[in-house]
Length: 362
Figure 1: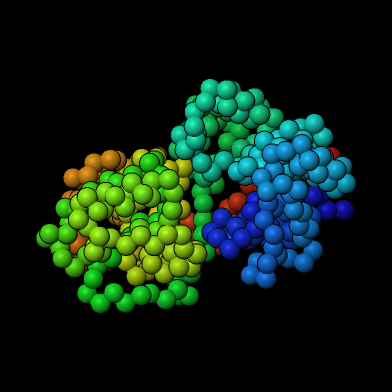
Figure 2: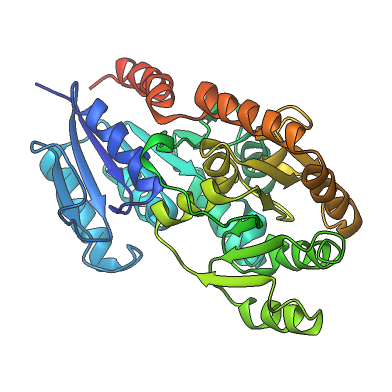
């Protein structure tokens, strides 16, 4: 009889869902896999027919009814392992512990600095994390954060970097004629450093009249950023696109001369590998998960975090040296293929989960 694995993530058409669906497809060859999702399925989402899908009673699985729902399913299917990410981690750890699930994995993909640092919430998370048997993080920066902030032993943490599929040949690019496009994609939040990019870009416009900045995403800082653009008289050079689908984001990256990730901190930086996958030069802030992916002057460029002048110099250098830009873009793509492309990442990750399952005594 096959052992059972519960895995919780949001079914969708984005990069995160893409990865977990690929993981489920491969785990399903050896184990019974049951997905717990806070979103409904649609025709665009391909799930193996024999994979069971459960939908949480609540839009976010944090309520008593969700705990009862999970308890009943654990009693029915008797999973050997649970894997949870994002909002489902707490309830999976509590109910899984109480039901005696042998291996309880918390998959951490964000830094604690991305959330309000209330002492009571940090203390509560420390207690909850004691209920996990194993942890997966998407970068060494996240691993260090989980260890220092929540006192999780290093020996319990495995780093499995994020990955995406190689869509390069499937994505069309937009012809911007002689305009060199600089793209940012992500939340419009203070921690993302978008104002640093806008200020650096303002220094670009005078010497480089053939440039355009495209900002993709939405968030609480949107009105402030639009005001900054207006104050700097950049309206004709900056285009706020709002939220776009994954494929549209990739299309914009493929159409761009370069992309910038100016975040003050990132657990990993999905947009870094998305830009790399489209053979676009990426310039990122020299911190946390970003600097783990970008090798400065090899697979991209790094600038000192929050330093407008340094970012301006890096962008100017790329604009003035198209041959260097092209070389870095190709090296970035090769780096992505060798380390962050899903087919290779799945083999790496399956080895880890298979090893854990082999050591579970029923």
